[in-house]
Image 1 (cartoon, one colour):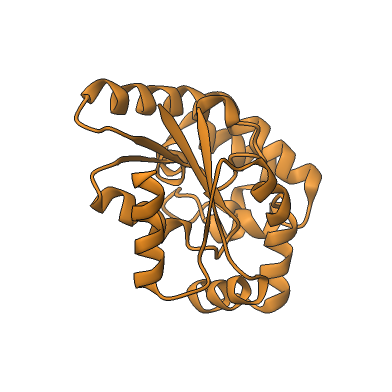
Image 2 (cartoon, helix red, strand yellow):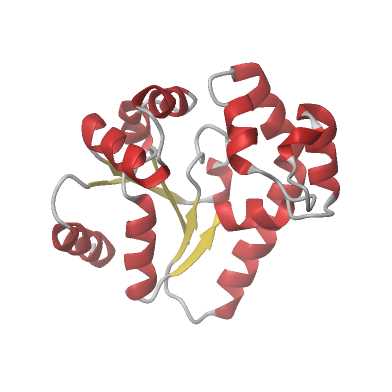
Length: 194
C-alpha cells in the first residue's frame, strides 16, 4: 500500500512527512528526487537550460531553482513544458524509489510525498491520498516567512496549483493544519491508527 501525501504550498505537508517518519513510515520525497534528476551535469538539466535559458544555471552549472520558478510560476504553458520535460526521468526515479521502499519490508506504510501529485497526474503511483490543508491566509503567511516572498509572488505560486478544495475532494484522508504543532502531530498519529 502506497499513500500519496500532498497539499498546497504552506499547508504543512513537510511537517506531516517528518511526523510520518517519526512514527516509523517510509517517506519517498518527490522534491529530493527532482533535485537529483536536475543535478549538475544531468541530461535533464541540459534540456532545461536549453529550453528556459542558460541564466537558470549559476556559475557552477547548478540549477537556480528560484530563477526557474520565476519563469514558470504564473505561466501555465511554461509550467506545462517544464513538467513535460521532466516527466520521464522523474517517473522512472519515482517508481524505483517506491519499489525500493516497498521491498525493504521494514515499513508498514510507504508515503509518496508529492506536492504536485494531482497537478502532474501522478495519482496512479498511489493507492490512497492524504491531503494536508490549512486556511489560505495561514498558508500565505507561512510561505512569505519561509521563502521571503511577497504576497503577490505567493499567490502566483498558489495559482499554479490545484485549488485546495479540489485536492480535499479527491482525498481519502484530510489533515487540517490550523492549530499547534502538537495538534498536528496528534492528527497524524490518529490518521495512521485508522
